[in-house]
Structure formats: structure tokens, C-alpha cells
Length: 400
Image (cartoon, rainbow, N blue to C red):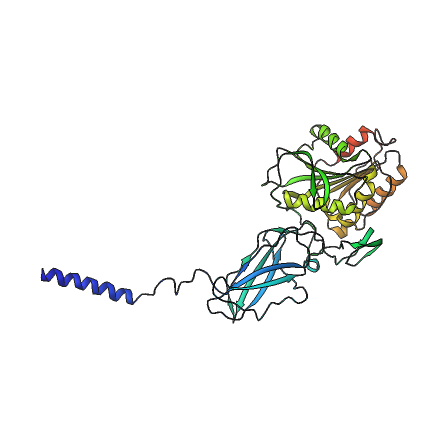
């Protein structure tokens, strides 16, 4: 018994000595490196300047600095965020979890230029005395509106910010437009990665950031795969009749799997097209290189403004059909970084159709041999033959 008792006590003392010589987990082994930034995702759609709330956690409660970056390609590349006036990036307080609350204001318009529809993530990294902690990244959110830093032309009512030339009457809030930097906008080979949209949708009128449009989403839509998208400005028949036409014809023309938005060309402007484009890209996964524009009759002017001026770089192909006015592209293919496809269906108005096509040709657009269209139905306004040729034109067209 005595021998067993001595042996038992020896084991206990050995274990106690071993425990005292070891570090206690949880004090030395931190669950993450500090200082650490916890970042809240801004609501979509966000406008510039973008206000981003974040917290800094540090076990030593040190004074910290932050670096802030953005990505437009899901994290493939990161660029520095320009702070808006008054934004603080140094001498920031920190503390134990949940940390000290701060806010950063990002001048997105200066960094991106053309904001609408951009899918963005923001990354924060906190530092103190040379120690770099665990970075914090927002979820993807989407941009709309904003101010531009490039040049452009436009007409309309309201006032806006940005550089460029234009005419306008009255007062109100406008949207500045400009040319983005850092490559083609939106980037080649990517998609909007939008989510949350219903599928299928059979022509239901939908509020798209204040603009009513009829939405068609095919049953084949899969959020994991980028999808073709066509934006249509209707003629005098209105958006409901145009929606019925598309539903009846798309199955036989190779465009059955497209997502469509049809706007009423009698009553809308280019800004409504901007709203629709941004909304669809935010709610559906739209292929950056397979987005198309069709302007019909009464919708000619708004489509020209959208396709040639404010959102020129978004469209792989643009057909102006049954034209009632004319316009020319604001940027050349060299300036855009790619050569869009284009054509016009005269519907008897060859004078305006020729101005549009000549403008496309001079800008380096890719045109079919028959431009402007001179096939069946080209000499009369509102023919089915020309409309069918217009819809068939888009099949297989890409920006690259």
C-alpha cells in the first residue's frame, strides 16, 4: 500500500510540474492577429461618396491607422480607395472586442468614374507600430449614380456634377457621367454577379430604382452562369405590346434564354435606361460582354443617348430600329477599348439611319455588310420583317 501511495503521489506531482511549465492556451495563442478591422457592407445601391462603418479591435488598445482598397473583379485585383474630404485614416482609437467604432468616406466617383451597376468589395487593414492585423472585407455591393471625372455630352433637365458639355433646363438632381479608368468598364470576361432576382418572370412590370419596366427572365436562368441581357426601348406601341411581341418571337430567333427589360419609349429617358441596367445587374448575374440595346421608333432618342453617350461601354451590340431621329457615338472603339457591333433599321427614314450608321462606322464599330439595313421591311415603318432582322442581329455578339 505504501509503495502504491508513493507511486500515485509521484505521478500527481509530475503532472503538476509539467502543467506549470507549459503556456496556457488562449492567452498566448490569439484567435486572430490584432489590430483587426470589422467592416459593415454598405447598402445597395450605393452612391458616391460611400460611407462605410467599421470597428477596430486591438488587445493593446493602441492608436491605429487604416488602409482601404476596392476591387471590381471579385478580389482578383485591388486598388487604393481615395478618401473623401474629411475622411480620417490615422490616429484612430481601438479597444477590446467589440472594438472602437469609426466611419470611412470613399470618393468612389474619383476612383471608378462611371459608377452605375458596378459590383464592389472593400477591404480594410488596420496597423499599429508596424504590426499588421487581420483585414476585414465587405460583402459585394452595387453602385448607382455618382459623379464623373471624364468628358461627355448630354441633354436633359436638372443639374449634375462632373466634367463635360451638355444642355439642360430647370432645376433638379442630375447624374454626372465620365469615362472610367483602369481598363474597359465593366471589365472583359466578367459578370455582374447580381443575386436575389426571381426566376422565371414572364413580362411582369417591375420597379427598377424608380423606373417601371417589364421584365422577362427565362426558366433556364441559373445564377451561377452569366446570362445575356437585352434592354429594349419600345415604340409607340408601348412596353406591354412590345413585351408580347418579344415573348412570341424570341423562341424562334435564338434569343429565348436572354433576360429582357422593356421600357416604354414614349415616356422614358436615358436615365431610366441607366436605372434598369443597374437594377438588372444588381439582381441577376449579367454577362459583361453580352449586354445588348434595341431602340424602337419612339424610343430612338432615349436609346441613342444611353447607347452612344452615358453607357456606351456596356453594350456589345446596339440596333436602332424604325428610327425617328439620329445621333452618333461619343467615343471611338479605340477610346472604349473594344469595337461594339451596330446597325440601324430605317423603317423608311434612310436619312437618319445613314447618319447613325456613318457615325458608328467612323467610330470603329463593327457593322454588317448591309448597313443600314436594306432588306425586307426597310422601306416602311413598323414592319415585322425589319423587326425580326433586328432581333436576329444580336445572336452571338460579344464585346471582344
